[in-house]
Image (cartoon, rainbow, N blue to C red; front, side, top):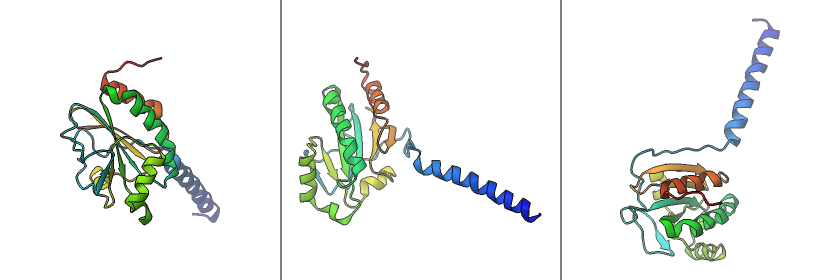
Length: 183
């Protein structure tokens, strides 16, 4: 192969790799690591806030939104108003929101500071402190924030990673609850 051909081939390969990697890192992905199997329980929570300990067995018949978050994550903070709106709108119809606080940094393990963040952000739904990543690992989660919807039979049927797709999440909740869209 001539040096000119080799240079052109490497340049083309480089352009393809850059195009792939740039979209792979910036494109939001919907990943459901657990499809059509029973959702993992909240076993392993270090403590609970706003609720006694919950189990999915006790939540059968409800639609459960599980949100993995951490108190210093700006993306997690941006998601909170949307979660609050979903909670306010659909809790009376059978939606249960459960926050799973899995710390990214050591200082996020402090229960007093977590309580302060829960109060500051006016989080009224149950929050499980997952300091040892037991719930995180059971879900195969890798991101903050991440949302998982669990149907009335206890199966993970939807997930979303990161901010956004709020309308899509709400639409899926309405489908699961059998609630028509309000205008």
